[in-house]
Length: 79
Image 1 (cartoon, one colour):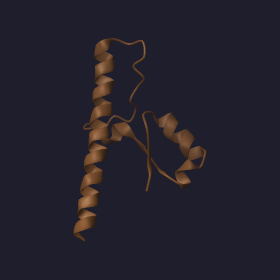
Image 2 (cartoon, one colour; image 1 turned 45 degrees about the vertical axis):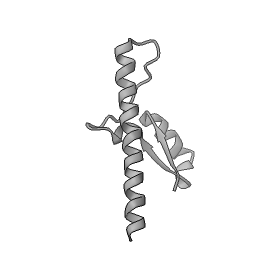
Image 3 (tube, one colour; image 1 turned 135 degrees about the vertical axis):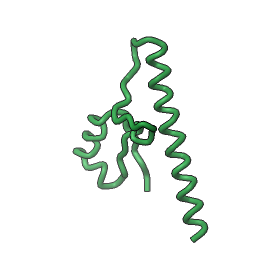
Image 4 (cartoon, one colour; image 1 turned 90 degrees about the horizontal axis):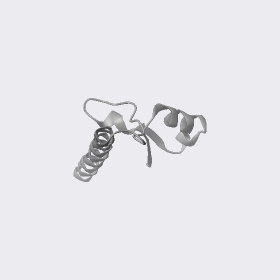
């Protein structure tokens, strides 16, 4: 099933309200980080350090989603 990944709870809520979530799973990227970060802010016009922190959350979340997907595929293949 497809996964739509959002950065902010308001984005996820808009997708759920539009009923897109009837067809796709909707998730917050920061919930795949450790510790969880439900809101990954837009770093536009912020400091470089702030941008790097936001990018680190994005990078960590995407990497964890990829790792979960790989583990799920492996488990399914072994069944």
